[in-house]
Length: 366
Length: 128
Image 1 (cartoon, rainbow over the protein chains, first blue to last red):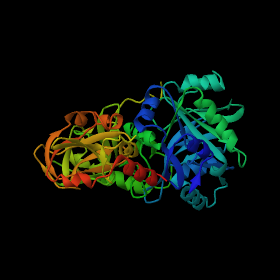
Image 2: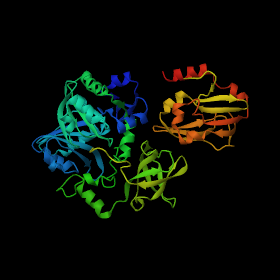
Image 3: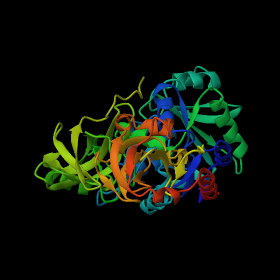
Image 4: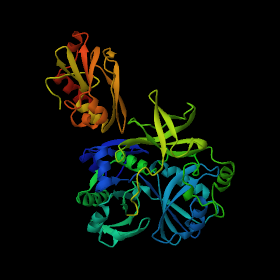
């Protein structure tokens, strides 16, 4: 199992470690719910070094991405970040990812940890005649995420007030703890937040730890994947492998805003057009549970006629709402706001209402 | 934290004798392993439990864990407060976070439970 450059730090700080996407990652340091509240009310710091980074450069980098991605990159300027989906020809999702435009014909893709190798191979297979160079630079890239309402003031102290003025979905270069870093106004929590890259020479553990420690020293709470999962679920941000995968298309996953059907041509376009024509058979919805039991991945969903009409893909307890919440796919005719369904939890049918998502307001643009 | 005056089960419940009744909860070690508890399901008063029978569940963000009765007997009281504030089990596992009171059916079962020393040994071995 792989370890991030912060592994020793985590061990020294009593992190509970679990396997995630082939990596040994902290799931919590103190309490998942306390770490959750640190992000919602103050500031928390996540080790996300496990995420994959792939560079795309070359004369036809734009054309290549315009073909392999569902979103439209033609509007991107250097310093912009864009969320996109990458589809197979059959319309299923290869991965969801962020595209960073570094310069003309020079991009960085940030992909899910468990998909890094698969994505790299998929992109290479799509290269065909495109004049483009791909590089998987995940091994030497450190990546940490500073999230929460205090993240701006923390960043201003460490990297200067200019960097802290970044708009949402933009990135720039700066320095933290004497190291050159790239900072983007992005995240996976729904709170104001920043993500910090350090492109390290081989074996630069101490540099990553120095950046991490400098941030922690500003009264920032280290947070694990447990808190991260609650934070992203409250926003209905999908998690690959749970809510989306190769058998799910981005339209049923509620990601049509990141699919630009008017683009000339892109991988999966024909299949998605067909899906649009025939209509979606099911959709991803947000459910609020009446009771506190957690509806977990794979639990069946029933309509009022006791017929199974769907399945849960992710569930958790929302500390902000003090309620259990879940995401799941249900038949389109049942996917109506306010519809009361039930989820079978340990043999018991538990009432669940389809609610508006995100479950709580987003603060990413604060 | 393993109070000396209590008895313990291998499945990490504690038992406190009060005359013919016992109070049952989960240990500090168990709550720590589960993490933030968000839901506790307890039996109805009057239910007859057999030793090692599941009497409910404690659910945390990470996992669900069955609760097992260390003794046989009738449920005579449940802690309704932990139903509304499950976090009490994390904060006060041996006091405010108690779960059920059982009228003992077979007093001999109590002698089969672990002492604090034996339980401490069990969890220390488990965490190595």
